[in-house]
Image (cartoon, rainbow, N blue to C red; front, side):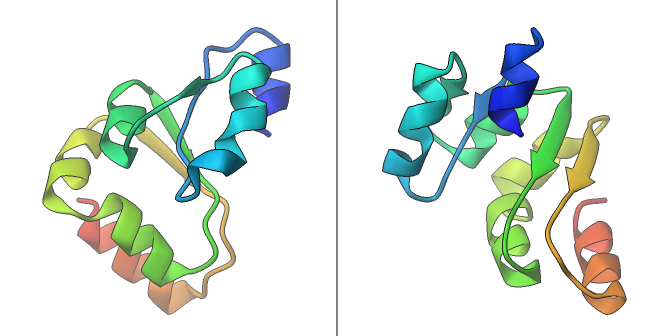
Length: 93
C-alpha cells in the first residue's frame, strides 16, 4: 500500500517494528521514520496496518504518540473486533 501511494505521487512516511522490513519501502522512495511518533508527526493521514488491538494500542496510544493524532485522519486496516475498535477509538481521543 505504501509503495503504491508513493508510485502515484504521495509523500509517504513509514515505520515498522522491524526496521529491516521498511528497507524496500525506502528504496521505493518512502521516508522511513525512526519512531511511530516521527511517522505520525510527518503525516496528515495515518494508515495503520497492525495485527491486533494490542499492537495498535502499543503503537498509537502512548502519551507521546496519542497527542500527535489530534486533527489527523486515522485509517485502521487491522482485523479487530467491534469491542477492540471502540477501545482503540476511546484511547485516541
